[in-house]
Image (cartoon, rainbow over the protein chains, first blue to last red):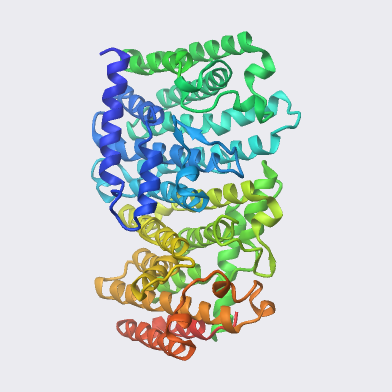
Length: 296
Length: 296
């Protein structure tokens, strides 16, 4: 299967699962569920869930038991976008080609729908039927990985430092902290969760973790390059936002070409860490390249 | 032991546990952890954790295994206050006698520290060592109860309808929805979590649930009465906020005396539901009275 077909197939599985577990727009209170669905089904590529599924399958996993965890990652990613777009945060008006959540539903509803998305993520991981397929300590470990990746020592930590650093002179260490936490931590968690639920051995779990760290950082560098070089049409959001907000990025710090080279090196290093996994990790290898070379 | 001593003893246990699991103010990024601790240790009464512990002990539980769940309820309660106080929401400047989180740390940090508190709540419930003391399906059930009480069908749902109803004419059904969800759902969850982790039988779990529903609603009516009759000094926040914001409350709908009577009836009904529990539920009976008759 080529990568495009693979991505579409996995995205479909995640979307079908989300469709089933997220209340319909007619569910009371309707505005809340409309706001949740507006952002959740806004055309996201489902990269994090797909990475989790690919890691799960790379270590021999084959059932649907990965879906609650993979989908939780997407709910968390979506909540983080809704909150990050708020006027008090990044103040963005467009996301994936559509007005941002607070532009449509107001700030209060954006805060609350983000809160609800985060809570729903944890709901999914507490379903009793999960225990029919997987040992309880692995369920808790996977949830713990997601909490760690999403929380104060992960994504939120990165977002805090990003906000505090705006318009100030930041050193390279701070820039690295922001990138590895704001985007990297949840991507790393996606790989680890796939490994944990797939019962990876130590060596493979470590390989997946390193791959996740490399690809997470490469993903952010690619994002920053797209912010400079992409068009609003391709990206569905305003470009050059980083520059306008005085955000320091890899391309701004190193220059565009060295930044592109860094992303390429990280991609190669990430792929190298999958050596012990052999043929089953083919989709992960292709995903790394897709993440670095994507145009949107 | 009299109730005052009981409350102090349980509060101390919860505070010590929270002190231990919540990162110190010196932990990077410091501002985030300062903001988290500012609101978490602002002098909250720890009613929800105490209700969970009291329910746990009422059904025969006796270890510290309840603490992660009890404390998660307080982290969730605190995050909800931080977000509710935001300008886009209730726009409150004071809480527990101190400026609200966003007044001190700014709106962005208030959003993020709320998000971090919620994530931390779920972290606590995924600790591996919990499994040494309690069956995995009970751990997941307790987490699920908390998700349900805190989420789109619980506390967040109530807050959404409350926000949407401001300044509009609401019927009694809507008022009841707001109260039973915004405050009631998490209190109900506290009782159920105590019962679940304490391995309550069906009858007792149902009794605790009904008690939680009654006391949760009585709690909110008492709160609304305090908002009208209390002083800023006793409450640590501006009073008559509901009236100013055009919020409809039980006292506004029924009149003060009938509202007071309703709270008393709910208290009695709540206590009645503990009959099957006998002497071990004495603290819960006294807590019901405390909740209805408190002056702050």
